[in-house]
Image 1 (cartoon, rainbow, N blue to C red):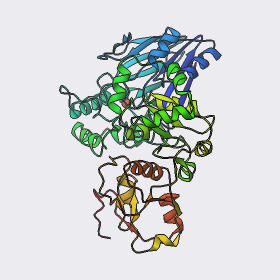
Image 2 (cartoon, rainbow, N blue to C red):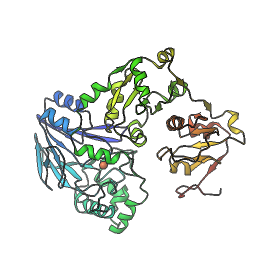
Image 3 (cartoon, helix red, strand yellow):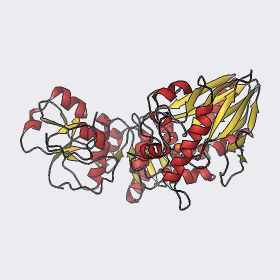
Image 4 (cartoon, rainbow, N blue to C red):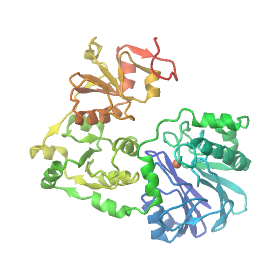
Length: 471
Ligand SMILES: [Fe+2]
């Protein structure tokens, strides 16, 4: 028996490859299926089942492509409905893979069809649970995403309580919990950085598994403190219920190298977005005018999903040489399938051809200019980070909110910072397009400000609802 966790940091997502004898199964595959085909080929195994713990909201799964490529059966839990052929498994139904068995356990709560998959090893002993978004390490899946006119978030939280107490917590303490997400995922709020654990340990440390917690208190705690889900979540759910463009077609189209003539053509089309995925340093030094920055070396896909409202947005990529396919693939993982191509050759060559270029001024955090009394600061971190500690008098405009709805002065200069200098460059690139031109990036962000500058800071109490502390 072989079990491999394939963890994708950008999405904080875990897919699982399971093999026994000459048969294999995949749990919650990502959009690109080549890695799973390669693993099965290496093991001389046939992929027999594709298990989906639920209709994912935060990524587009490749289950249909994988089923077409392998002939495997897609399995969802009870109540699932979709446009493609799949098998609706029943609670406690077993699926054989080589010498091992996988049992579907219907564990609704995060969504109605949410199911977990319990693996019995060759000796028939419970070995691990692929818990999807029913149970994370340190947390549980948020029950507010699959709300409808027929089911409220409280109903779903109540179902989650019963799934945990009546099904999952009754399993042996020594089984491993393999969740679908880890720290940083917007599918939960309090996940640990560990990507697996034993059920017994989770019973000790996971607030949601506290046996003393009444159902009412559980519902209150699980629903408390949830942030607004990213705008692309319902769109990805719809895509996961449908049949989408095959990933190979998306990559082929996205890997079209764009010539200078085509560039001028796309530039004239107002709905085309130029997306620069290089490093913050490269972007601030020189970029194509009006392009926006969301770098590959960061939580790229979630920021694209949060900030680019139109999932069908025509996109032209400006990518580091050799990483174009990676960029197209990572965009398609969250359903941004409309990449028209990428800018061929470096940005310098475009400048020589007379294309309009831009730069973002940057300052080091220890620059004395930042100590002047009339400096205006703009903090683009999340509310919790801002409340922890910030610069006195800084304006707060979190990047995860709608940047259009701001109260900034168009003619005023702002020194912009985030935690480390990734989000601030994203924010400046978007605000530049909205007509805010006097924005200066602070290199290294708040980390550098705190460690290497004399800018006065304002410390607030943790968890205050707004930054209204007087100290
Ligand atoms: Fe989910």
